[in-house]
Image (tube, rainbow, N blue to C red; front, side):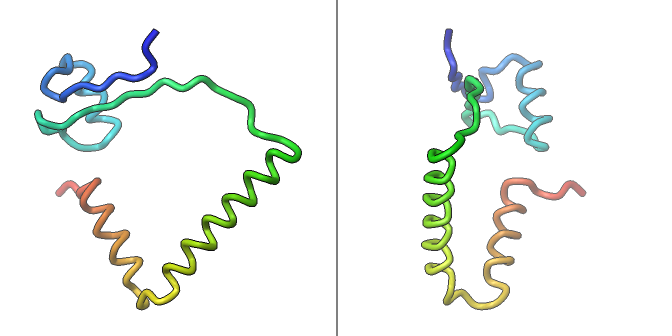
Amino acid sequence: MENISINLARDLPASARSAVENLLGRSLRDDEEVSVMALDPHPAPSGEARWASADRLRSALDQLALKAQNVANGEVDEAVDEAMNHIRPRRT
C-alpha cells in the first residue's frame, strides 16, 4: 500500500480538494502540488536514545541561536509575521 500521494490540485476529486483546502485554511491554485503522507506510529525513544536525541536537538538550537545573535530587534518577529501572512493570509 502506498504511504505517499502527490497530485496536482486540479487533478484532485472535489471532495479531496475541499478537505485539503479546509485543512490549510485557504484555496488551492490548480497548479499547486498536494502531498499526503501516512506514517506508522512508533513509540517515543526512552533511556539513552532519548538523551541522545535531546542532545542533538540542543546542539542544533544552539547553532541556530549563534546565527541569530546579530539580528536586530524586531527583525525576527517581522520575518515570522511575513512568512505567516504568506502561507496563511488573513481573510477579510
